[in-house]
Length: 96
Image (cartoon, rainbow, N blue to C red; front, side, top):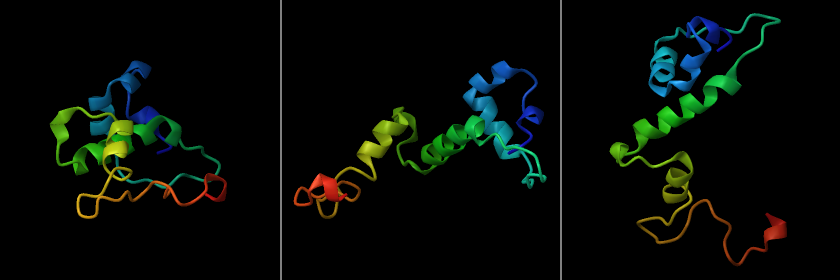
């Protein structure tokens, strides 16, 4: 997204999550022209946060992204009880 300025009429809109998510969803896919810079640093958090919010079956529980990650991909698997994204206790930390 190299034209983030076209999404907002005032820099304070960057603080409005709902506005940014709606504006990014409505923005057409556009290639970055040669020599232009992109603003992923300004929009990446909105995009990732919205993907997590939309894929989480418990959307209304208000979990933060760190809490979501601790509960879901890094937490115990319901089927096996093991963890999927954590280092096994048997594996020394320096090797990871």
